[in-house]
Amino acid sequence: MKAILFSCLLLLCSLLLSAQQFSPTTGVRCANCVPANYNAIGTPFISDVDRPGLNINSPNYLWDIYMSLVDTPPSLYSQQLPIGQGKNSFVSLKTSEGVQNDKLYIDVSGFDINKTYVFRYSVSAIGMYDYPAPVSPYAESATMEIGTVGQNPNFIIASQTTTFDASNKKHWTKRVITFKPASSTLRFRLSGKTPGQTPGYVHFSIDKYPFDCQLLNTQVELSRSLIETPFPNDKLDLSTVGIKSATTPTAELVWKAGPNSTDPTLTPQQAASVAISNQDPANVKPYYAFYYAKDFNCYSASVSQAELKFNYVPTQVPLTKTSIAVSCADPKGNLTSALEYPDDDSRVVWFKTNDHQGEVVYNATQVDPGDYYAFYYSLSKGGYSLPANQVSTKQVTVGNPIMPGIPDLGPTISINSLFFLANGSKDFTVKIHNIKAENSNCSVYFKVSKLPGFNITYSTQAGQSNGVPTNNDFWTFVESDSYITVTSKYGITASNYSVVGFNITRNAGTPAGAKQNLSITIPQPGGGGETNVSNNQTITTLTAD
Image 1 (cartoon, one colour):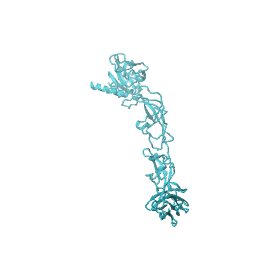
Image 2: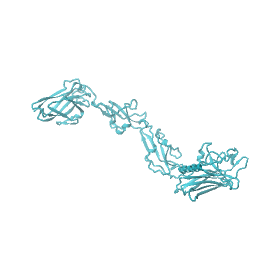
Image 3: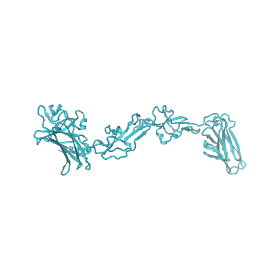
Image 4: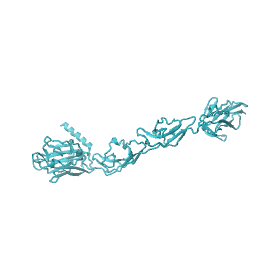
């Protein structure tokens, strides 16, 4: 008894979880048995369209109908079961006046007392016989009662009796009961009536989802109808799509690959990784959102207007420049400096070909001079942003802006006065000429001698000296004990020059009358590729006045 009671408690709990997901009146044909989750008074049995289940060991039990084949029961769930596993099955009850009076009932929880429910089921009174015995009497009626459970006292809230006659007794009669629950748990009780002492039979067919849909006819409102990706094999998790409309408590959001509620529903695994909609541009395949009530197996709309396209768009990488100048001091280029959106660095790859063939550039921040092409790429999202037949038009050329030749370089110095009072300070400039009509290469540099009686300083920025524009930013400066070595970042173009500004100050300890020579020298290796070194030095004498 304890085991039976415990099993009943487990049954009630499962029904609480299932809510109005009804237990269908189906099963494998058997005698003295009931469908899953039902309770019986008497000895009901499960039948199917081929034979009654009253005595499965007797091959002579047949239906009293032409060819002994009963009409297919209206239950869609029953129709979809495999042959031999309950296909086209239903439950049968023996009924008579006092001798046999089978009853069947099931308790279902989860009803909302503020709602009205529409319940659908079907009944039949077809007779049977054990050949060559006569046909059983036909039942007079079948009754469906819906009542409360756990109330004191319990009472019937809805009852419906179907009376059989010659027109309907051998066929299924579809019935509908509309009711408003008085409690959250209700008992559905099935019974029948046959006049006399010899039993007749009533048959019930109840589907897995016998209640009309409780959802309003409404559409899902998406926050957007189009999502684009630059990757042709990218995947989208549909659960990340924004939903503007509110989901009712009795429903859930589901996705389908077609607009009709009868189209297959995507599983959670499928919806978490859907493919591009426009893989075939001539046959775009959007995704459609529905509200679905699991307990009623119904949708908020028969045709969804909540369409989402997840489209692949071939995408070029946006750049802010097409060339990067390298200098003599820093001959490597940084391709990432050309990206319009710096965050793109994590998903942009560079090649020396416009069709992403050959080796990828592994360090885009330190590249040699040459031409480079940018592509979006993601291993997890399906490769490159451009298909194999489309080339990148986003090219960056890295190089020295000056093509080298054989120059002829020479320095000149310009200063307002060669005489310095105590602590006196003056500006002077050094002009490096290229008097030949050919560019220098990157190795242009000159040396400024340091003087013990004077201190020489300079700026690394462009400016003016004695009213003359200077371009110190074109050069780099390195000091040793004897010299300031000044190196150009780029070559000096043909017939051009560059002016470098300095300041020189007489030291406090330098005696009056002292003379010191300031020399500007372009050493032979620093001539930028020149061959004439006869004009590579100028010397100026400074005097402490």
